[in-house]
Image 1 (tube, rainbow, N blue to C red):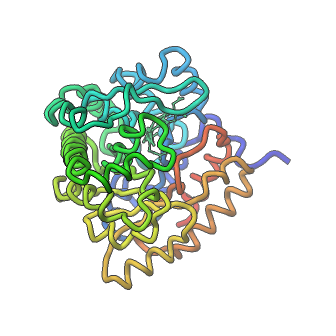
Image 2 (cartoon, rainbow, N blue to C red):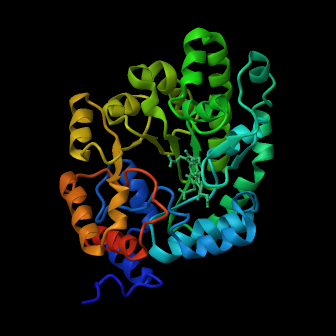
Length: 368
Ligand code: CP3
């Protein structure tokens, strides 16, 4: 028999949004309430990397224009940002952009290798190269297109749907810059941190100030919340505070206090209390650690933060039935506790199936 979820193309989001918002709260209100650990009738849902290659309408636009042109053209970036929200009625849109635009604005460009992977224009290795990076003030100027895209998206969404800005963490950005592309084990960055702490600090201060200003700029242009991606946080091992978190803390302290910040440090769920203490309103958790375990660790430390996550992205390559069961398991693990934003444990993969994404959203919406 055909799956009950397969009827949805395009996803009947009017129905989904109506169900989810029947208690009289908009998606944006539910999203912001969840960030503050206030009770909501249904957890808000969005997916990391929700604008991307699993969507046929994204692939069509990318074939026409190429990735970098999509990112740099506000009308196109706005269209790609809205694609997943139109199809699935997610409660939040996330700006279509990339974490590597900040190194680019500082003078270190990037491109994608044929066959996958990142290549930076050069590898940042010498103190002279670090000192030659553009001033922080260049970031807003050179990334004006991101602000323009956010304003266009906000105009389309009105105030019904949350809008997220984002940036990479200084550690994760430095890893791409110093390794010169694919990060591997970040050996060169670790060597810099250990053997030349003065220049490591110079680079990390520059990145922290640049990221903080880029996030403030995105908030000024309409972002309701911002997410910091520390995708390579696990490469810090036991040195997370020294190598990464101290710089993220500096960014969090520089953001307007009313705007929630989400921190995603992949592989570092054990650091959730430290991340919350650093000022994150929301800790985004990968799929290796049950949310309830993180919630208990926060409570034991006397801390309060909302949790985001943490469905295994591989589930979206299975079936709607398996997706539904896995979504229910994540929801049951949180047992309806306030402060849950439903998401994946890492970005959605290109092989994710549309009917499974639809099943995910329907199942979360049915959870009330
Ligand atoms: O969430 C969203 O939908 C917003 C858009 C977004 C992109 N990248 C678009 C993108 C976001 C939030 C990112 C963040 C990002 N970029 C991260 C952190 C998130 C994570 O998954 O850990 C990282 C590490 C990057 C750097 C980056 N950009 C990589 C490693 C790649 C893949 C390169 C490859 O091997 O193909 C990208 C490209 C990229 N960024 C794509 C998208 C949609 C795919 C580009 C394509 O269409 O081929």
